Image (cartoon, rainbow, N blue to C red; front, top):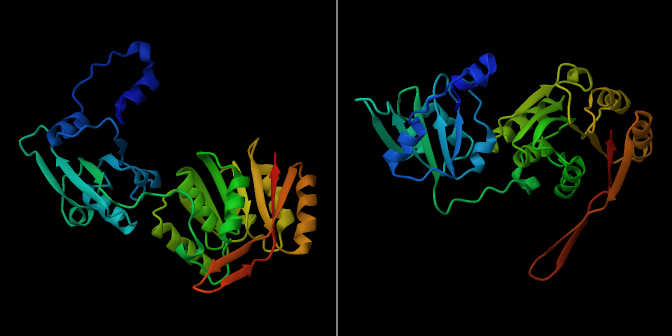
Length: 322
């Protein structure tokens, strides 16, 4: 009943026709061997899944246990975790538990990535004491790879994410994603969310790929091309953010209205006066209830003697609610 055949049998035959006799699990044996408690461990199985299915939410946890196998043997999982910046774990790989060939290997993620292990093993991971605490919200512009000046500013991103009211699970479209700053921050806040980030600029697409790797995000699909044309085959969204429209805002909002799930919302930002005036009207024509906030940001920092102040251009953040 734990990533096993029990679920399938229950669905196929019904629980009334099943008798289930529990036996000692591989997880019980593993933690008994290591003499560790396991009541606060995050468990998952990567056996039989795609090569790049290491969910970002796993890296939120200090203690992990992963069932390996198929395209995901322990050394490959360790290599991908290192590539995503998660090098601060101690790892135990437990092979052939209960068999004469039983073996337990411990090391850093880097050391495990250089080893070779039985395909169907258990990986036990413990974050090293004193490692930086994962912070799901609060990336700054300097953290995110972007083309100079072309990024949703920190303060505006905070308002956008507030307006989006993202669910923990569901589908989110980020249209005209630019560097993908909203995408990455949304993924870190809601790691169970399936995100489709739509962008047509090749330079920005490279920035998005870099940021996905840098922050270890796995549930982000990059959609290259012009919206709304490339949105045809995407699953219906619960939330949409429009960071750029390429002059096709009306067409995009029409598709958003047609595809958005009941109770969903679309959020967009307006910089130009033309968009400030036209976007609310278009949203209302599509049947949305509209609310908006004009956000004017003044940034200050203090040097040894003086205060330096920067005024950013006012941005209108608006939400259309179904």
